[in-house]
Amino acid sequence: MASQTRTGKAFEYALLQELYERLHTLTTTRIIENTPYKTAKQYFDNFDADAQDAYRITSSAAINFLIDVEPRLSHAAGLDDILELEIVADARGQVGDVRDILTVRSQQSWEIGISAKNNHRAVKHPRLSPKIDFGQKWLGLPCSERYFDEIAPTFNMLADVRNNDKTAKWDAVGDVGLDVYKPVLDAFRAELMRLNEAHPLELSRRLLAYLIGEYDFYKVIRQRGKVEIQAYNLHGSLNQGFKRVKPKAKIPILKLPNRLIEAVYKDNSHTTLIVSLDEGWQIAFRLHSAKSTVEPSLKFDINLLSTPYTLFATHLFVSN
Image (tube, rainbow, N blue to C red; front, side, top):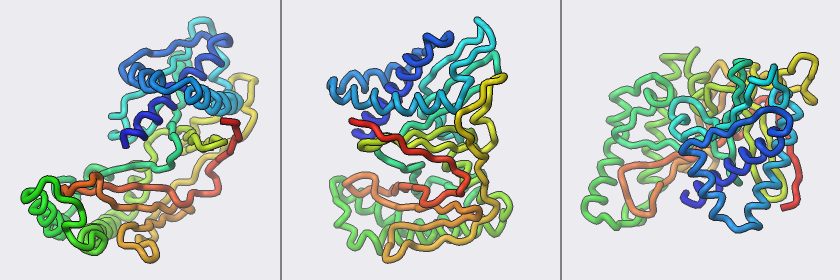
């Protein structure tokens, strides 16, 4: 995870710098040099020149595309219409905002955000523990006492192992898949279905809002030899023209789900649930241990397996 943090923050910095380099000669542009910016710069500066060049090349390709589909990046309403570039604090992700970079024109009451991913596609990494009410935290819908009763034996067992030996590895608990992951996932699945039964019109949209955020954004995924750009145009704020200047590509509004269809185990797995929503949304919830030593806490790796056909995505190939 530490490596992902370093590479992810360096990529955020590279994207921000490429935005500035491409735009500051076209429009008044200002970087907000806040603490997240200084942290990302430090991570970027710690890479060698070749790695930095690779980040710049990928970022340049992505930014060129974004300028083509977002005319307001390069077009101002007047001399005092300043484009501000900001890397946002990670804490924003806890309140339904997955964007890492914001580009803002306050005078136009306009902004777009970018979620930067370096060689991984996970959307969230939330935890489960005896003290975490995932229903309240994720959805604003509290979990039942039954859920906490169902997970208690497994987490109590893990706490006992930890208390007896703080260096104990996971093989000390036996078959981790069957003895740890499956009972917790069984309880998680049962509670998710109970919440869905109680709130059928709300759960699917609240779940998606938690996973991909409350705001429209572009996701920029850096991979070996290419960069993928996805447009999560949930509310129609992306892809706006500026006066007579039109975007060079059309980005449709993304269809949101209205109901949860099913939550089933992945074939031959005790660690992964596949949650299917209508409109083509399918999500994998893989449970795993966050550390090499036993602790009474587990972590999800959550990925989108499928999305509606209205999700705009493009791949740009680069030489890095």
